[in-house]
Amino acid sequence: MPRLPPADPSASPATGWTRAHWEAVADRLLDALTPYASPGLAQYRLPGPPSQSGPWSDGLEGFARSFLLAAFRIAGSGGRETPGLIERYAAGLESGTDPRSPDHWPPITDRSQPMVEASSVAIALHETRPWIWDRLDDRVRQRIADWLGGFLGAVVNDSNWRLFQVITEEFLASVGAPHSRAEIDAGLARLEDWYRGDGWYTDGDGRKFDYYNAWALHLYPVLWARIAGPRADSRLVAEHRARLRSFLHDHQHFFGGDGAPVHQGRSLTYRFATTAPLWAGVLADATPLPPGRTRRLASGALKHFAERGVPDERGLLTLGWYRPFLPVTQRYSGPASPYWASKAFLGLLLPADHPVWTEPEEPGPAESGDVRRALPAPGWLLHSTAADGIVRLVNHGSDRLPPPPATAEDSPHYARFAYSSATAPETPAHRAPDNHIALLAPDGTPTPRGRIHPLGVQGARAASWHRAVLPGSDEGHRIETVSVTHGAWEVRVHRVDAPPGTPVREGGWAVADDSAPPVASAGPGRARARRADGLTSTIVALHGWRDAGAAVARAAGTNACGHHSATPCLT
Picture 1 (spheres, rainbow, N blue to C red):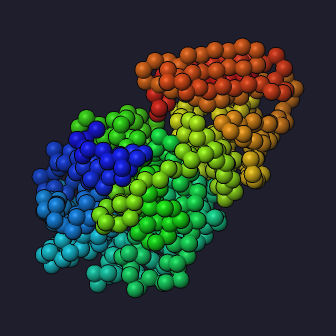
Picture 2 (tube, rainbow, N blue to C red):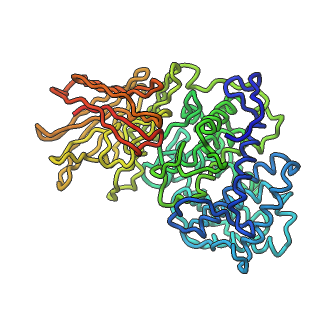
């Protein structure tokens, strides 16, 4: 953990953290990058396996994502506390856009990773305009505009990437550079296609619900409006704000009493970026949350990771959750990818005397009482218990598969029946039993869940069905599942349409620990795994499991929450 100011229990009775703690963490993250800077300060080549885009693109990613953090720090202090950062990133902009420089940036081309990074550069340039853009030489400003202008006419992935184009070209418009208003409008219109109500978007066609709602699909419209100013359609801006307000009614429930976000979806190595929409709601005057609750949730998440080794002893954000753990990454993840966590520091744009920084912390929902919340749009049911502060997400709607007839393999971060703020799914998913029901082939191979077909979410109940296909067979067997929650418990009722005698396996939660393997016990119709700190996963056979075998499946190195993991199962 970086060296921090003293805790302030009067202002922050839950976390002790204040704005000064956020500034200290930001400074530590930025200072730790300097040994990895290229000679011209245009790239940061961090240690670790390269992404599919290669080291050249990864170096740009290190600059762009850290520039986002630097921008919030610079603008938040009015440029007074950060002269070194201003000089450092101004130099990088000059070198990165000079084709004669050995550390110049790769160009923006169709569906290329520099599209993602360009949007961070554009946001950072806008927020630091008086201290960086306005002071650059005209030739450097022209080179930056030319590089960002690679977006014009380019093909963009049909997902949250459409907003990278919106952001970048709106910045170009703001500085009088060539841009396409038609491309900006088309990107914003595509966002409308993905809206599913109650503040929820799918990230592209299909049922793709995850934290991209938080750190992209709601965040970028707010940042776009800041750049566009009077050019923005006021009715559209008002609609975006109304949706963000609605989303935050739900999003506040995704943080456990210990600050941990629910562990679900892709790009989880961005960690506390989950707090970005909390700050965005305040910036856009679009939050239903009291100021003290906003800070408590955001500071709680940042502190949660800081107390668990994030950033690491070098001050770096690694590819992982707590410790380095590559199974939470994707092919596009490179050594600097975790620095999208910079979005969490958006709150530094708010003045130090804003109520979100000065009002006393208020408890989050998971601390205030037991909660059950139905989310019909993504097909989720949230339930949390104040006694342990754990938030649990029951999943009957998000599989991240493209629309039919396309098929894809299960992802452990989407295919499970449940996720929580205290656990992580076993990865890879192929044979893992946790929070899954499967038919078993003769060699023990389990069927995947595949496409989730929602049947509704209401009150304490959520339901869906999926088709279980055994290896080597074209025939699928329908499994219909209803989940009913009560306190910390979830009752799952399955109707399995399969030939008599087909083996069936059901798994409970995987609990994991770095210090020691969880303690396991099993008896007739029930099994349990217990971590050293008392966190316990139990599965109990209620009906239909005649002569069920109960056991605990153990694994090592397959769980983001700890090296040793265990899952209670019934067969």
